[in-house]
Image 1 (cartoon, helix red, strand yellow):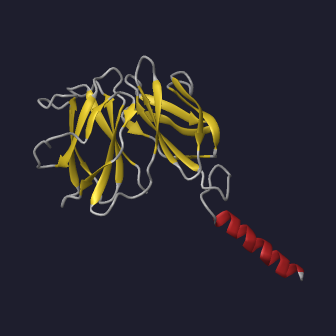
Image 2 (cartoon, rainbow, N blue to C red; image 1 turned 30 degrees about the vertical axis):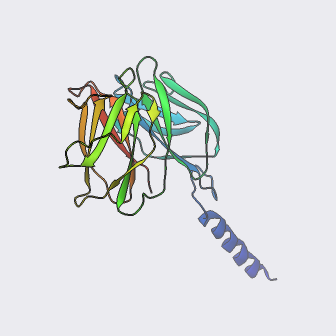
Image 3 (cartoon, rainbow, N blue to C red; image 1 turned 120 degrees about the vertical axis):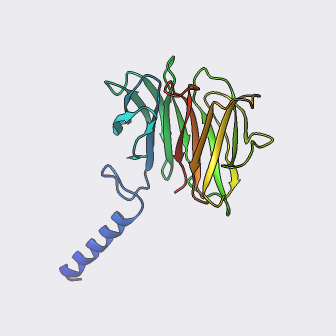
Length: 232
């Protein structure tokens, strides 16, 4: 085989290797994990977060979520800080698996803590949207979460009943509306008189989202919701 043919084959094979799967941080041919960080820690106006040696963000505002960062498949610590990367909370020895996407949620004051949500990347079934709830309002009551179309009255029963702090629900699938708008109402468990959160969100058909309930002193009720998309 002449040298020109050999060179052409080598270049072609290299192109195939680089083109397969996801890549990031100089790692090729690997569908590496994606991780983002939500800063829901009261009193921390700007957070920094790292997973292993990979930076998730160094100015993640309170009530916001960072961009996704790519990290290799391995066991590593996720560290969060304000002036440093590790002075607030650490989630130790978590395995970040290939082809998975995660949202790490920093929350609470005493102690500061991190809860990891492993995304469901699949689409919801036809003519529905998928919503699940995560409760990270540390010290807050268990909550009932009601899902409905915007103009509908309160459903007879909650989609998520008595969801405790530091817990994540399974998905509830809600019929698609004509406007793609949905109403999420959160009450202290057993109470339907005064909603602690009443939020209208826009969700495209078949998408899956997490509704993360957190403590927010800037709101009259002291609670708020951050919506995070899970499906691709």
